[in-house]
Length: 353
Image (tube, rainbow, N blue to C red; front, side, top):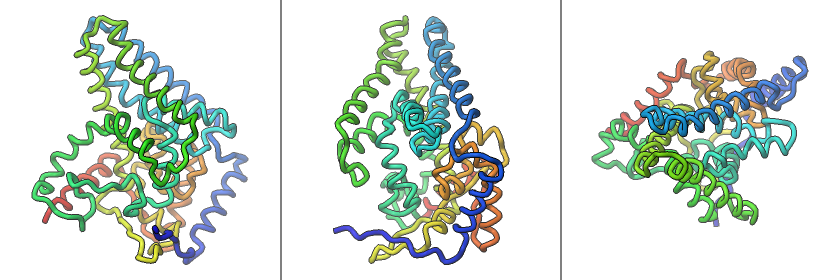
């Protein structure tokens, strides 16, 4: 029987004060925690660009620019997912459930199952970030040595060289392998799956394959080989863009990885755990925040996952001030480049014997 994981009580008033000040911010500015008109406008802009780029595949079918269209479709898929669907699976893109369901479905339309990701993300990662055997996003592979104390292999010495190449197939693994493994293995975060979700899973996977593979083959002059090459380019750019957003926030040279005690007790309180295992980056960059859907304000997101990312730029200074006030370490990289270098350094450092 598995041991129940328990967080100790909060040792100070940090989280209580953070909640108080965040609530006061919304009250004083007469705002609500959900996305507002700017989020709707962002969705319309991104969706329009996505549709126009997809249509250009048919327009450029006799031209090498068709590959450029595939290249741009990759990041566009990810930008839609992390800006719109991410808020939606947290139930905060809009105050109405129906609108949230519609926005969450945008993830299904680009191949990734929103149901499994919601369970994996909320039940696993958000409760236990960087917690060994509890955070589904923290899976140790023999190919990559993420944890300093993991078994060392001779080839780990070169992982800082070959791992970036492995990242190029991240979304291929997600859409065609991980989703199926999560959905049909019935993991702890997917104990009971409604029949409707099975239907949606099959339907949207079929739609995705039809949209990006079958339709270009049957309705353009492109050969099967050319469509396959186009899809590979799509996944390479999508994978690198996604890893740029995800990796720096939890897996860098300054990251802390936690293991519960034998009795299931965690070493830190819940709020302190979120702070020490999470890293902010490029929080002063409006363009980074816009493109990454606030993923760079990751500490605020982990402390307040029930608040839309459009509010993070105003809330992060509050959180940062309180973190410093209570003597906690505020993990932050000034730019996306430095954040990714910090991840690269982790790979290089852990590759040493």
